[in-house]
Image (tube, rainbow, N blue to C red; front, side):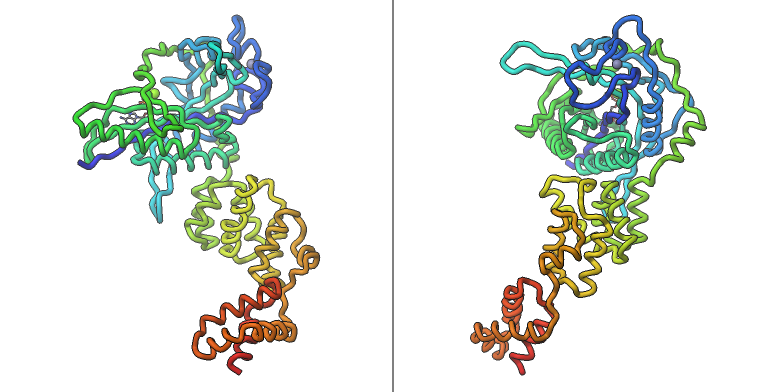
Length: 477
Ligand code: ADP
Ligand code: ZN
Ligand code: MG
C-alpha cells in the first residue's frame, strides 16, 4: 500500500526583547536562578500585567512575514493547568482570537519547486519557568527566570508531507525570524522549540488520520529523524491491522525512537477563559504599516534576486541566503569585485570550511570584504597563483592582515621570471631522466608529475603555465 505522511508543526519562538511580556524583568539567558523575577511574573496577588509593546511589534513582524491576516482585535486568554514551573497555575496565552491567522510560508524544495505551507495561526504567550531535576536526589529545583518571557507560537496547517519538507519548513522559518531579528533562534538555549504532529493516510485519501504529537526534539535534524521513525512506526502498526493512538510521544535521541508519554489532553482540559487583567490587543493600520515599512528583504526574495543578479547556481545561493549575515558579507564582496561566482566558490568551499573548523560565525571573521576583493585581484594580476591564494586566505583568516602585506611578509609572490623557472626545470629534468624518456615515448601524462616536482621545488610559487611551456620545450626541443 502507498501511504502518505501528514505533518503539522507547532513552533515556539522566544522573542528577543530585553524585558518580559508583561513586566520589566530582564530576559537575559543564563542569569543566576530566580534573580530575574518580580511580583508580576511570579504571579503574586494584587498585581497587573502590562503588555510589552516591543514584543507585540516583533510578533507582528513575524506574522506579516509569513503572510498572515492580522485581525484588528485579538485577546489574551488564561490557559489553566497546574505545574510547579507555572506559579500562577495558568499561562497567559491567546486562544480563540489569536494575533494572526491564515498565512503561508513558502519552502524551497528543488529546482523551481516552491511549496506553500499554510499557517493556521500565530499567537503570543508567556513562557513558563524551568525545573531542574537533581540527580540522585528525590527532589527538583525550580528557576522562575524564564517565567513571562515572550513567545510566539506558529502553528502550521497539516500540509507538510515528509520529514525532509518538515526540515525545510523549519530552516526557512528560522531564517525568516533571523532576518527579522525578532528571535535569536538559539536552539540550545531553547529560543526555538518545535513539536511535531504526524499522521499517515493512504495516498489519495482526503480524511486525516489519527495523529501523534512528538515532543522533546532539540535540533531540526532531530525533528526530521523523529518524524522518519514515527512515520515508519505508524505504517507498521496500520499494516498489522492495528490503530494509531492519539497521544503525546517523546523523542529519545539516544535510542532514536519515540516513546508514548501520555494520552493527549483536549483543549477543554485547559479551561481557557478570557484574561480579565489585560485589555484586548488592538492592531491599528498605522502600527501594521510601521512594522511593514521596517521589514528587511526576506530570504526567499533575496534568493530570487541573487540568482538573477549574480547568476550563481541555486545551490550556492541557497547556502548564502539562509544566513543573513553571510549574505550581507557576500553582497559587500560583489560590490567590490565583479565575479560573483568566484566569490561564492571561495565563500562556500574555503570560508565556510574555516568557520566551521574554528567553530566561528561569519560576524567574527577578520577578513573584510575589501581584503577578500584585493586577494582576488592579486590572483587576476598573476601576483599570486590560485593555489597559493588558498594558503594566503588561511593566513588572512588568522591574522586579519591585508593580502599584499602577507604576500611580502611570507614571500608568496608567484615566480614568473623565465630564467629562474628554467633553472629549476633543468634541475628536475636531470633528476628524472626516466620520466623524460617515457614522455618522449608518448606517455604524455607523466608531464603532470614533472610539473608537480617543479612546483614543489618552488614551494608552489612558480607560474604553472610558464613551467608547463618550459618543460615541453626542453623535452621535445
Ligand atoms: P490539537 O487540538 O491537538 O492541539 P490542532 O488542531 O490545534 O490540534 O493542531 C495542532 C497541530 O497539529 C497543527 O499544526 C495541525 O496542523 C496539526 N494536525 C492536526 N491534525 C493533524 C493530523 N491528523 N495529522 C497531522 N497533523 C495534524
Ligand atoms: Zn517580572
Ligand atoms: Mg491546538
